[in-house]
Image (cartoon, rainbow, N blue to C red; front, side, top):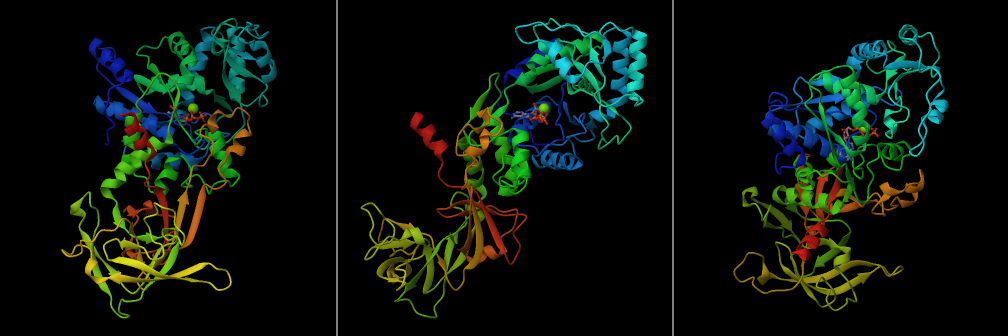
Length: 563
Ligand code: ATP
Ligand code: MG
């Protein structure tokens, strides 16, 4: 199991204290409890690393539990994707895969027990009336007129709710706590509602479904969870969770610990909005490489190690904040830098003819695969008379510090020779530059003792005869605004969507070895960034590369300027 051990944090401090006092008999048992109503995102990865990582750190256990109490929004597709994502991140729940729906019978019995204790009642108020009776933060609520029903009547009505005698929404079961509590969660919260919905696991067996706030703490209890780690918004729910556990007289109650959820700049973590982006076709599915989903990051070419490293570095805190997406990109680069093959790919080709290079000659030049990692070896790349370079590596009328190619100027071609631009050939009608005529200096071959003449610029290139055509997809942030999540207006985030978040280049030319590129490898296209094959759209005769991340590391720059 991959452990996200690393730094200690306040949660580990709490566990250390529990271990010292023998609180749970030395056990540490956590769980990751997703609701299967969407795909997992990088925020969930933080929770996964924290729950599985904490268990691993203490030789404990971590369960995967689907909190599937709301059949109207949940689907099998989401269950399967969540399992795949957790496994891909490097974590293993072994034989501990659970569903809250497995506990429906036990939860029903807990509810019956609360009725018998006089601590739950069937209420006939409508949803709107319940809201009205609840009061506000500044005003206490009012008791429901059904609050004082007898235990017998409540038991009878609740059983008949289960048996399907009443219409959807006509009655609910509520906990009898305190309508004047300053904590709104304790103002007789709903425990069960009538809802004729087919559940993905229990089918039509049930027409009443427990509320999350009732099911969650009891599911934790039933699984023997010791530390129930969740995000800050559940802090106000903790008294309710404890009320259920205490009122039912349950021992060995899970201890809830809240931490700040992950927010990232230039993207959203709301499943509701991510779902809208998918359903409205603003992105191409949950695994679109621009999405902050685990499946999107995977399709883009990000590795699980980079995500775990990121989750480790952001740590856990008690107050909400937004992490710069540059930090995630930094972690991705650090990981790829060690393992990516350095290759040459020309994204927007401009033809170059070396006039003094023999027509039929092809030289096989040596190129290292990764200067950071000599073990990755070297390869041969073909050099010939007609090449492609990048269009923006040439300017006819360059500014002062332009060290790339321009008329009369010299540059080095990486792993090859110094060339000089002699003439520019343009399309007669449009004036567009279509070809450069150059000469090369045979005494400047890379790696040769005598090839020591220095020039300022070095360009990447490919041999036109040998290069392979490829499609390349470049991605930008999904949102132009750094804080789209803070947009209060329901629809307001739409105006913040980046209309240019994906650029597709269809006539790229890549070095011939990339015809054999494989899905498991990562590539650094020199000067262009890190790339990987798109697992869905790429095939042997039709290469499609995604840019995982560019080379420019804004995070390292910020860090260095602060040091
Ligand atoms: P919903 O609004 O549908 O409940 P959710 O994001 O809370 O969405 P869950 O499936 O309930 O999704 O989340 C599973 C677990 O992941 C929970 O324990 C939740 O606290 C945690 N989690 C969700 N989002 C984040 C986040 N951005 N950062 C850290 N943990 C998160
Ligand atoms: Mg949730």
